[in-house]
Image (cartoon, rainbow, N blue to C red; front, side):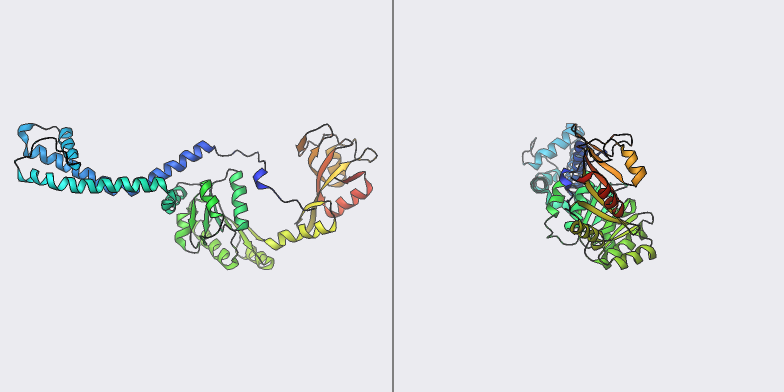
Length: 362
């Protein structure tokens, strides 16, 4: 029986990024985007206040306005509520007509824009994502957010890894969950250098090419290598022969065919119901099985180290008859009757040992 990895329930021991710090960082990036949007309007308003204050000081010296008081007078004009009588100087008189129109227009635009951004942050998703990506270092860039890419994304985030996602199709159903999670999401064709620049590939640790287009994956991998020669490239390809040639010819770190990965698991699940999972390592088939230990077999009373040293089979998990489960038990741990073992080793060794020993599929 082939057991599927449940990423949502996966327990990892690696240190995860603190949620509070992550949220504060996201909010800081949003503030930076908002400031960039509002800066021109705020600058205009500031120029109006400062310029008007200087005019009041220049043309009404007898009133000895301080700069703060003069700026307040101009601020009052913004709301058409002058703080003093109509001035005598023509230039100051013009302020009484110009400042309310100009100031209110800028102020109302600011309020409307701020309300819109707070109501719907997604309207600035692109700018926000670019700012977040630009502040990342040693992160992972994931190209493609289909079924495979989304599962990779969830696992990486469970491990606490910072991820920037690039997806070409804006209608992919998983994008909304990526947005809710808060990771930077860029929608567009990653073959465009600007997308990789926005994802800050130059400072990334790794790039994962998980789209369904082999040639696009290869092109993006080469572009990423050009921008960041030291980046680790993990490439998905449907043709394993081509994947092997690409890995050797272009010095790609890992080029993986999905069919090559899944074929052993499907085949071994059909061969024996005890096979939980399988993979090929250096052309050797390695399987994983769960065993139950019986008292009349020679496994009972032996140590985990004895099983490895004698038969070349590793114990990945031991569920003791006394209760409790332990991943990778110590070599000195004793195996007792009634224990359940999750073992892994070469298929031939696993099969031969099961026939000889008192261990049965769990």
